[in-house]
Length: 152
Image (cartoon, rainbow, N blue to C red; front, side, top):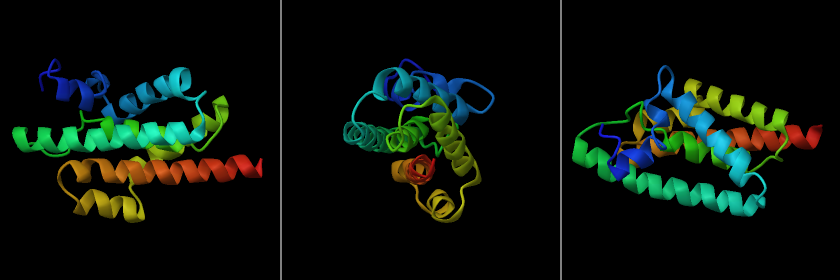
């Protein structure tokens, strides 16, 4: 992957997906830092809109990239983790331990891929296949975080 291609820069979230080991975790960590310092102070509805817009753009960029390159869901592609985590974090307040728990739950769901998350990963192809499982993992992690926040 040529990092200086705009699609590669986008899909690797500025190169975070090129870090090893565990590029998905590095991409999620980079997304967390951007959320903490740039998005967390915005209203939840605005954060959700940003996550959805980022996810839709990433779907389009990813679909075009995969068609051109003949590649599949490559580990360096972390735009899906970014969209999913930003969606998850939009459901919780910017409290360090709550955000940390949501980050952890998101990573567990993204790696374990239970239920419908795993079905999306195994069944869907192209840009949608790359994005869908992480967005669902983000939605689930965000809802878990919101319930946890209400209970405490």
